[in-house]
Image (cartoon, rainbow, N blue to C red; front, side, top):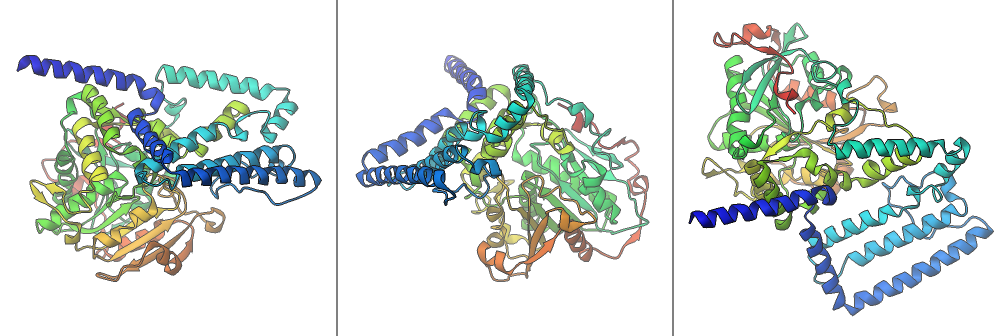
Length: 583
């Protein structure tokens, strides 16, 4: 028996070594999953003569259209034969409309459209495999975009001629620097200029509680009076908490404190290989539940406004459903920021979630004891490759520019690790099986149901979210009968949330739609909601703060942190605490 276990361990280590070696090449994507998708597509295409005929006819038609476009454009203005996707910003400059650059653009867009049609609607191909194959094909096509080469990019070409090629020299230097940083596993350069507690995460507060998994920060009041009901913020454990407390001008924490709220923040510890067996249940009990118990000690007889961001919102919803099941009414409200509860349609992130992909990640985590956020950074970049990969290539390597480091970019580079067991449970139970939305998720051996929730909910989705698509976030309306205020704001997963109000809202480009559904109100679909919701300019923060205030008791005199602590809490540290600095 011991021999069998030893052989299994050796086999697992060998598999993990191979998978870990392939990780930088595959960007965290299982190669077997990609092969399976293309085999599914190719085998079904081989027995679909009708689809083959359509592809040949489409290729011939697009070729004729392109030839006609070249001929007509040479004699004057004419309509393009192919249009870029609305979010594609690569060819918007006026120079792209001039000969011969417009010819290459139209050829590329026609080819892009042809391949998109070719990869879809092949009879018999599973939807998941179709989406994976189309996504990967699009990534390869983007490599050959005319914008990525000096000779076919009019803006780069003009700048190169004007500078005598100096931009290419600088670009080569930038590429060499980035390559050395990648090979040596260095962090993003100049991140030391955005250190938590020194340059970011500056809101004054104290760490009032610590266990192995979390530090609980309480922020000092800045107003003479505060609302009695405190606010607990649960960030995602995949990144550091201070995205919600960046610089003073864009800190959500500071905004709430300055408007009279007593704010608590969970700061997650960065797990090591010794934490491999931490489970979702540990993140619930040692995380949210421990924080709630401590806040209840600090502010007795008061309910708590709970806020969750991204994965933190998913975990918060699980905790809220657990409390509802057990008859605990400690929560006054729940706010979900870019958080999914139903994972059936998780957007492009779902491309990387199937049995093959999870087994691949589990093999790596079994050897390491965790998954490092940096090991999945490539996959996240590919989701929005036009903005995160190819625009960088053009700006830094072809134009020779430097992308300025901001507090948000520095935070984004400050990745954390995820314990083996917890991350495996998260991927399987939530993403793969959708147990939470379908009533199979169990806490302490008993199932929970989001339908048990009886509290007001405020939900924020963002228009350009590639991680938590707003229509997926919108499904909260199907999962609960609570009073639900839904906000759809401009921006993406991070920028849409870190969206502070400014004096001249109309010049920021930010806006949002908002509408409230009454308890047990009728459901309307996302498209109908878009037509009926109120359009507002600027940040959604003031609307949310007013929503919290309306669901809080009358403000009372603010008390310093030390006066709120119980007698046994005699020693505490300044925010941002220890855990945020663990790398």
